[in-house]
Structure formats: C-alpha cells, structure tokens
Picture (cartoon, rainbow, N blue to C red):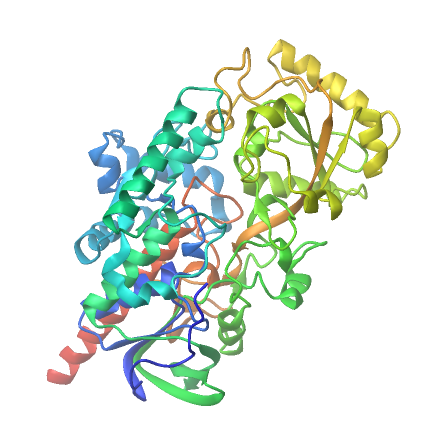
Length: 572
C-alpha cells in the first residue's frame, strides 16, 4: 500500500451548497449527482482513500430493469412489477412500500446517469440467481450486474488512493464475479482451467501494454472517482466528521477534524451522509448487535466506525435495524476475515455447531445463513464458532479461501486454530471439542442424503441459488456429496459481515426522519449509514451497493429540486 501524505490538495472553502460525507459508493454517487445539478459540492472523507466498502466488494449491483439487463435480454415482461412483488414478499412492512417501490422505479435511471457521466459500464452476471428466487417475483436467472473491467490509468496518481483490496492479488489479475464461479470449481469442469487461462492471458496483455486493470468493486469506485474529477468535485481526505451543525432545527453544515484542527463547513442546501456503517466500532457492535460479535470478523472498510450514525442521532434522527448487518459466515483467518461464499455451497461439506449437529442448509444466502447462526446461539448451544467440516476429496477438488485444491493450507492457519485436521472424524471431533460420537452420526446421516440426492433435514440444493456455486458434475444433487475420505478438516466459522445495515431512518427521497416521522431539514443519508431499504433480508447480489448509489443520487436530486423552488420563490 502506498504511503499517502495526509494533506488537502485544494483550499477548502468555508461553505458549499452541498457537503457530502464519505467517499464510498453512496457518497461519490451523491456528490456526482449534486454537481451535475449545478450545486457547489464538496466531499469529505475520513480515511486517506476513496472507495470505502464498495471498493472492497464483489461489485454486484441489484437494480432490476437496468440497461445492462436489457442488453442481455434479461428483463422479463412485467419485471418491475415482479420485482416489487418480490420485495413485498421478502422485506414486507419492515420498510415502507413507497421507499421500496421508489428504489425499483428510479434505479435504472441512476445506472443510465452513471453510464453518461462516468466510464462505468455494467454487464449481466449470467445465471446469478436472486437470493430467494422461489419467493413470489424472484428470478432464478438473476437480476445482478457487475462493472466491466477497466484500465484505470486515467486516474494518474489518484489511483494510489484507491481503498486497499479485500484480498491481495497480483497486479492486473482481473477476476469478475462470473469468473469466480468457474474458478471455485478448480479442475472439475473445463470452464475452470479455461477461465484461469483467460485471466492469465489478459493479465499478461495488460502488463505488456502498460494497462492498470481493475474489476469488481474496485472498478465501481474508480469509475465514480473519475466522474468526480471530470465534474470538478473536490475530495478532501483525512477529514473526519465530528458533528452536524444544527440551527433552528435545520442541519446547516458539518463539524470536521482536519490535520488535528476542528473546522466548520457550512452547507447552504444540504448535508448528505454516506459515511458507512459501524462495523469497526467494537463498542457500537456490543451495544446493538447480537452477541458474540467482533469487529475483526468484518470485511467492511476499517474507517467505518459509526460517525454518521452518532452525528445523526445527536441531531434527532430516528434509527432502525441496528441489530442487523449484511451478515455472512466468515472464516477468522490470521490477520483478516474471509467471507464464505462458494465454499459453503460446494458439495462434500457441512457446518455443525458445538453439539456436532447440522442446523441449517449450509448453502443459504449469507445473510440468512448468519441469522441461523445467531438463532442457534440463542438456544444456549454454542454456534459461535461453528465448524465447516469436509474431507480430502473436497479439499482436492475446490478453491477454498483463496487456496487452490491440493495446495496445502498455510501452517499459520493450523497454528492459530482456524483449521484442524485429523485422520478420522472421531479424532477431528475430539480435537475441536465436539461430543463423542456426534460428528460421526451427523456425517453418516448427511452421507445418506448425499447419496440419495435429497437433504431431508434442510433441503440443501433445492433452490436455484443453492445450485449457483455448486458442482454440476456431482449427481444426483449438485450441492451434496458424501464426506468419507480422510484426512478430515474442521474450519472455524463465525458470524462476520460486509457491514452493518442499521442506521438513520430515511424516506423515499433519502431525507433523514425524526422519531415522529417528520423530516430533519437539510439532512440526507444513503448507504450503510441509513437503515437498509432491504430490511432484514437480501434480495440478490448487489443488494447493498444498488441502494447506496440510488439513494445517494436521489438525495442530490431532492436538494436540487428544493433549491430550484427556493430560487423561484426568491425571483417571484
């Protein structure tokens, strides 16, 4: 990581039309939209980097009916109404319907705007199912899009400020979400090695031609940053939000800390918070989230410590969903968390609790799977940690936490107790402290289901989502295979997250609301600082980034609309 000097590269003024807090997907979209509405805009960012959690993500965007889905022929007749039915079914009254519907009605417009004002281009992620595709309005073929990889040389030295990646990878090694699905299968299908060859060839070509290629969440962050540069929006790094300025009940600016100095920045038209969640505040996690919990289990941006949440509540904002997050079963690797995606769906593995028993369909969407972990924990039987159990056949076949099949796990993983290995299931159970005979009985029952192709306990493999990261060469159920060939492995699983999803309550215009439902004038919020439009669930890949960029955009639109009305009144 490049060492960046904590300096402001422009003379920040004392006032702007709009002050945006946070240079992640929500904040950058908001600032870009505000600028293109003719509003004098500044963006302040706590860290030395742009991109936030968006830059660390897979880059999926769940916005039904957008141009990329249309180009791929993936917009069914009546799809918008079907998508509304879907959110009605899975979110319900946890979030007002007008807010859910506005997201779906305005979302395609936002992607059109980004296509016009940035180098970002999106493409369909083939067959990546909605996460609950069997619910009314769900789509088994999926509604998710991802950014087309881009050469980021146009950012020049500013590229050094891109948020550090979730995982380390060689320069120009570009893997899209569509590629990852194939690579996770290793050599099980021809698509795996062919995809790896394609990825390596593209990397070599990029090196030869001097390109600096990026994909996934990195590409979204880079595209938005280029849009801000072209629009002339200043970004002030190393500038932390301390408080909001409130006068006569209206938010009129922010108080920030910059280079150790406290400073006020006035906002003539509005403040938009896009400052992320509170996933890296252990204090707030212990106050709001189910227990046990740890900031070390989160893959969100390290700067997300709840500053926007605290400032908003101090100004009188209502909050909701503070006990929930964008959860995912996570491996607490030494020094970093690994968010489990494909590993749980691949056949030949199970997850057990401290009693050595399965307690869910391991291939559930990650938010739902972690809800099951905490439901189990509440019974008094320890589910934190749980253990993912598999055999040598599974280890030989599949990519696991970035380690290729047949490649040994790092010794540190064993030394720190993240991974345990034994020649028999009984020995494995004893090593991790499971009751004698429990794991053998669980595996025996599971193996019967695998051979028959039907998981009678938890129905694994029946949903189209279960099948996305499965192994199509395994029959009769592509998500089930026996666990029978030693040595055997147990990997710790904890309830990690991509970020928190509870925050300030907002309306369909991204305006922040008080407990009584009235609007706090001048204050807007989008992204994980706001209470999620998806409620307690997750509709599909990109259900976090999609709302962040849409409501950031809508906040700017509302400020511009109000500004135009004010000017008209003044001129009347």
